[in-house]
Length: 249
Image 1 (cartoon, rainbow, N blue to C red):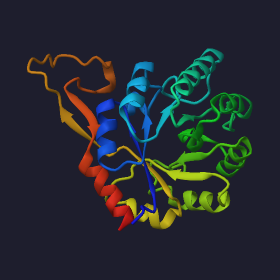
Image 2: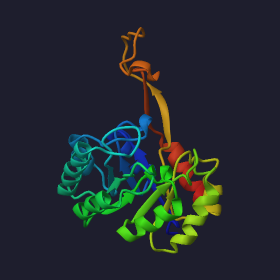
Image 3: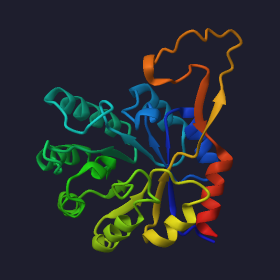
Image 4: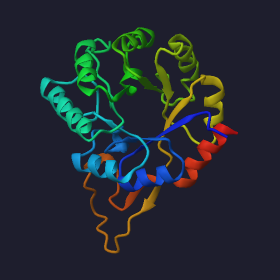
């Protein structure tokens, strides 16, 4: 039986990407720093992922954590990163830019889309920070974006289901709406049934212990973010399989 849905797994390592692929993911969103929402991966990471993976890769183009109001130098970085991803013939790029008033940065988003083509373009959860989601949706449709990743402007896709369903209905096939954020084996079926979407985004991650024998626990390189160097976050094959199985049951 052909799967009814598409599953995109967000990863921030090659190992996690390979695990996700083996567990049945249809597509990878390749990032660095998932703990801070995902930022642009290194050129080396993109190159190795493209060499080793058989499923499509969408590369996030986000120069830093935080808001989506970017300086000119950050915008130029995004253009350079898109050019590199395109040179490797990845499946797509994942972008998101807002103006200070919370509306889509239409002019600069158009430039990035034109540069990225013929790659697929997803607009990421910058959408969830937009002041008017319906206007933002229409703006992105007008720009020719392929897909919007959204939690329905809530902290999780489950909480945002009413808006997600509204967006799917309004989109009416003009653009794909992909629910994401907090999707797991226990809620995927609810998200499937109530959203009306066909594509779903999640990380399926688990914390594993570092293989280091010697440990210096007096400090963390991340400063005040409470992340231990001896706890690693990786994709979990069982969780990914369970999400996919529960969605298709």
